[in-house]
Length: 441
Ligand SMILES: Cc1ncc(COP(=O)(O)O)c(C=O)c1O
Image (cartoon, rainbow, N blue to C red; front, side, top):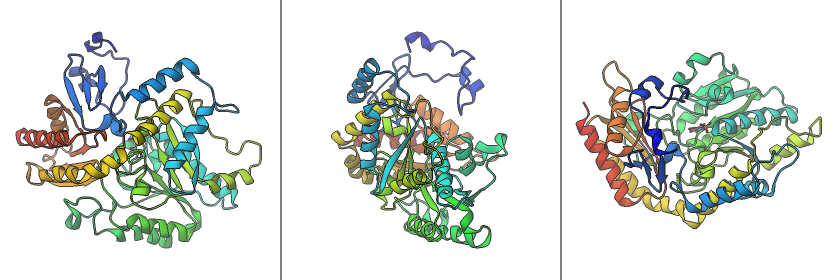
């Protein structure tokens, strides 16, 4: 984009998840980004506390990733992966599986988190059908879960506002409760001590409502992200894993946010030591630079589907841009950058200071809870009487005016910076947020 982009945006662009009419009154445009910052058309730096949208883990404009994309565009711009492909697709898949828990050795590429999720749900049904358990069609998601905007992801997602205009969704879906009790767990750093029992709801759902043999998969974000940053209580995910195993149900982790270092390991599955049957990822996979999603599955899931395939093609699923050459080049460069720059270890080093700074807001104006884990934090604000979300939106706008990009989900402020953030910048983020909160009615 050039400096002329500072003119009013035209009406033709229907912006996603945006109050379009309000945006036109005060457009928020960026024309450049580098490291921890965006730059407005006027050249004003804006500190990015959200890694773009939970994407840019290695920081903006990482030279290695930029070079890889430029070179790839000149070398091989596009090739489909329908019955043909290119070497980087195989390399990217292999490298990705090297970051996943043991046994997850197959990668299905797509272009977004939403597609990675819908792919996982389709694979789950196909897997059961291949094993002669075609009655396993139900999915179980969770309250406040966000799994993108495809029909499958929307159905298993737990954010009611996202669904309202689009029903009917998939009918065969239930939701577990949010595993969080503010009475015992408010202001917890990392995983709450209490709350493993929330997983038992899955067992009672299976015992009382559904025949377990009708359930295909349970899908959860290991740490709920967009829904407000809720780390799982200790032993909660382990218990979900045990219950799924007992009933032959697949466990899918949606790691679109938690993948690629957010918790100080390649995946939350590894940071938290619970291995799912499938992992969905996107965003940080290419450092946000080229759209790409991936569904990583256990080897035997592919093998079961392949063994029973009724035609040469094992799975009738795929996208024109699955394993796009630019995305593969970007993914390989991003994964190399994470390793070379030691970013996952850096998160482990910074996490205590991040938590300390986030929780220093405990006595700040309007704050009623702070949750943190790795380089993630959610700060709940007391909602205004009769105007849910208004205070969060105003705080976000005031932060922007103070030179800082902070996202709000209703009255929860969400923070998830590039993993290159410095200690000084962390201190600055929470001091600025405190000042903004003091000034906000
Ligand atoms: C956990 C999770 N799953 C899926 C998605 C959807 O990803 P996309 O917007 O790339 O489709 C998101 C997006 O924020 C997400 O946070």
